[in-house]
Length: 355
Image (cartoon, rainbow, N blue to C red):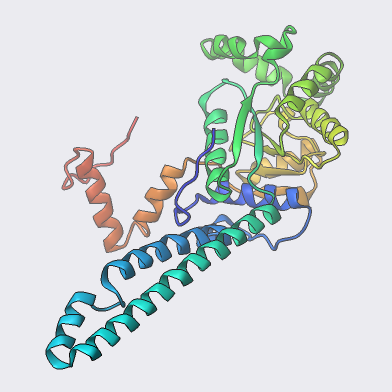
């Protein structure tokens, strides 16, 4: 699935930070990435070019209808007729049409030049990309994070496609093929979930788990990843880091190209030990606590850790852009309009929780 959006649409900070780091690594060269996602509110050169094309088209349409900017060609000719001889009016009109033709030709040339520049920039940036997200339906947060990032990839690099892959279910091997139904069962039995989580959240379990999954599943996972032919792999699931990373490295070697592997930790306060693998190209975390866990449990280097926050849907970024400073007069007016659109009495100052 692929789509593109308005080049001037605001990006949420987390997705911008993740994508900037992903593409910078994919290009294998420094492009002076910003420290945070706010800089991505400025359109990329290709996006700016698209905007210019649209404005140029508008100008072309305006010129065709009205002649020179700032006046109607018909009105101008009528005024000239009253004040000048017919031959002067005809000469003036011909010159006006010639200038109009030159303006249109200039716009057409500009279109061609900009389209060529867009194609060049796209090649230099490494986009559009084929992005492979690793996740499973074990709670909505993993999928939501992947789709949020995928949307921002497509906005930054129009034409980008993505897939969401559950690496364990296709293996057909027990117990890994039961990941989703087992999660649903334990979600309905919190005590079982708590027991399993704490028994598995340690270094000994991680070593055994990594070795057994590598021994029994790596070859199948490698073939599956290879079939997608990705340009970049992004894991948003704690169980899909070690073996998928190894498989991605082997696929990259076979194909003779760089396929970076990134982990986006979707937990905020605590995180399972299987999240953290020091061999990744980059790891994006949401809090200082998770950053410390990544260093302690995974020995992840500082230069691979990025404090980015949690990915959110683009819709939230749009609302935040419109809201601005919530304490300002404009911010309060916008909040009032939102409450009214939801059918909530704007004069009611009580807090509202949307479930």
